[in-house]
Amino acid sequence: MLSTKHLIDTEDLTLEDVQLILDTARSFKEVNTRTIKKLPTLRGRTVVTLFLEPSTRTKSSFEIAGKRLSADVQGLSGSSSSTVKGESLVDTAKTLDAMRCDAVVVRCKQAGSPLILANNMDAHIINGGDGKHRHPTQALLDVFSMRENLHFDGLEGFKGLNVGIVGDVGHSRVVGSLAPLLVRLGATVTVVAPPTLMPADPSVWGVSHVYDLDPVLPTFDIVYMLRIQMERLDGAPLPSLREYAALYGIGKERMAMMRPEAFLMHPGPVNRGVELTSDAVDSPRNLILDQVNSGVCVRMAVLYLLLGGDENVTVA
Ligand code: CP
Image (cartoon, rainbow, N blue to C red):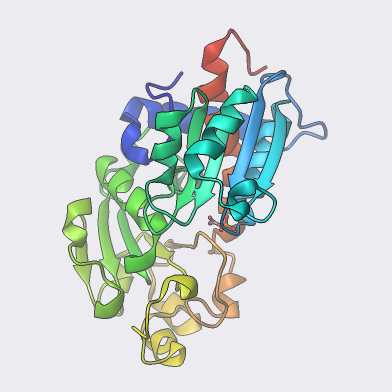
């Protein structure tokens, strides 16, 4: 079981926890290929998905993950919860706790809200993305996809892996969880962005940063593209999306500059024609849909390892 009660960020996890999540997710990957994909593991447990910001992948994959483990899953969205009537997050937390739910997966606009829930609830809290702060299960599913596609066990294979994270670094919650995790695993991480989309000090994550993509693109084993976060751009930090795409977007020409064995990744949703052309989105070297599949396996593992520890339950 995990060394933490809540999953607010990847920093809550020891490397032993990370390996346990990846190994458990691999066993669930096999379960997800079966005709009948259901296990009795979390029968009687209640998982609430409290999504106060839009989501396709994270919300649905957590709900599918909970159902495949036989948990009762209740979805609450921003428009269907009483937060729209002005109820505070702490009161929402206490209300859900009074219903004795076992885990709450929360997505919200305000950075730090999952921690507020964790401090006010008995249930396990899982951060499904808070503002531009953190997105730990995205980072875990990304390293799971890397490990599966690079075909190694354990964590040794991350050592020396050269990962470029390209795009809207400044507004991304993915990079804040993924970059430090990769660095802890021994990878070399470079973030690439125009100056207006680069955070003030990316070195806090243990990464180096550059502003020009083309000189470093051929050095990467993984090219991880970030979405331009249109909803978080204050003012106009980009002259135009066309100019951004010309300098930082990946299409046929830049795919030809990449190492032949390098993979292209993106957390989704993709702005087609901005950070990736349709050629790049639909390319077989792109792991986007593999990442989505990994999302279900990793979220099953996280739910199982957080909730299953409370009582004697089995995977098989
Ligand atoms: N990657 C990701 O978090 O996607 P959603 O916003 O669709 O959940």
